[in-house]
Image (cartoon, rainbow, N blue to C red; front, side, top):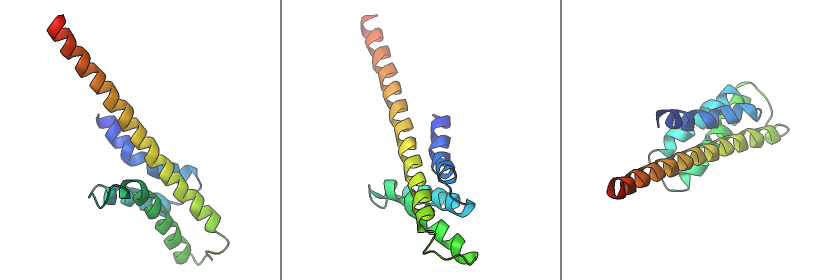
Length: 114
């Protein structure tokens, strides 16, 4: 459970980097994951890492004097990486939850009929 929880926080940032994002985008995705924990709305869980990476990449460009017009494709790509990372984290939690449910039900049935 600890491994799945830690990976759930790290995967969106890692995916942002793999999709060409900067450290700013990765940190933005991590901040988005943390913001999504506060239960703003159910859809915020999916969009907060995306929005965090998007804002992080835009802030990086502004700080380094880059124009956003020609680089928006890279910003969208990095933000999409954060979204995919969040979806992978959700899938990991779902698989782990199903596994735990199976084990608990199996042990319960074995305790009754075993």
